[in-house]
Image 1 (cartoon, protein in one colour):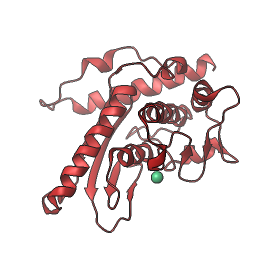
Image 2 (cartoon, helix red, strand yellow):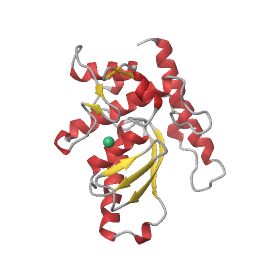
Image 3 (cartoon, rainbow, N blue to C red):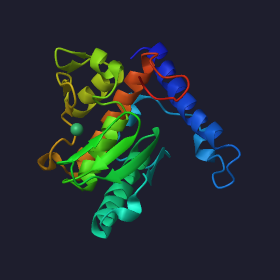
Image 4 (cartoon, helix red, strand yellow):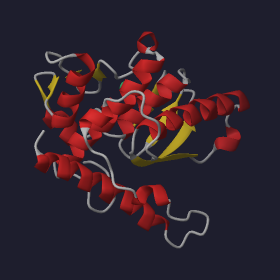
Length: 224
Ligand SMILES: [Zn+2]
C-alpha cells in the first residue's frame, strides 16, 4: 500500500464527511457531529480488525414519497431491515451517504442505484438491505467499479489488501457487472455475523478504491 494511495483515501473520506457537515449548516436539527472531526484511520490493517467497535459513520436513510400508501407490515419490515443494516454500516465503517427507500410490489426482490435510492419488493431483510446499500456505495453502479475489475478480479489497492487480510495471501476478490464475492451478501446462505462485518469492511475498502480514482463528483460527493 503506497502512502500516496492511503493519503488519497484519507483525503476522500475527510472530504466526503466534511461535505456532509457543510451540507447541514443552517439546519438547526443537525448540528455538525464532532465525530467527523476526528482523524480518519485509513489503514487497511485496522479495517481488517473485526473486533473493532464503531468509528462513527454518516449513512442515513429516509422514506421516499408515498410511504403512507404502502402496507403497514411492509413499512415496518423495511424500517427494521434498514435500521439494522445502517446500524451495521455505521458501526463498522465510516462512509457518507443518504439513502431514500421505497416499497414497490412490482420489484421481484430489491434494487438500488448510485443516487442512493433503494426499492424493496419481494425480498425484505437486513441482509438484503446491507446488500442494497453496497450498490448505493458504488458496487456495480459506478464507472470506476467496472474499471477496477480486470477479468473478473478486483484490482483496487484497498480491496486487494483487505481480501488478503481476510482470506490469506493468495485470496482474490471476484466481481461481475453487478456483484462482488465473497462478502457481497448476495444470497441468504452467505449471511452470518462475521460475514456481515467483513461485508461492511469490504464495501468500505471498495468505496475508498473508487474514490481514490479521482472520479468523485465534486458537486455531489458521489462516485461516478
Ligand atoms: Zn445486487
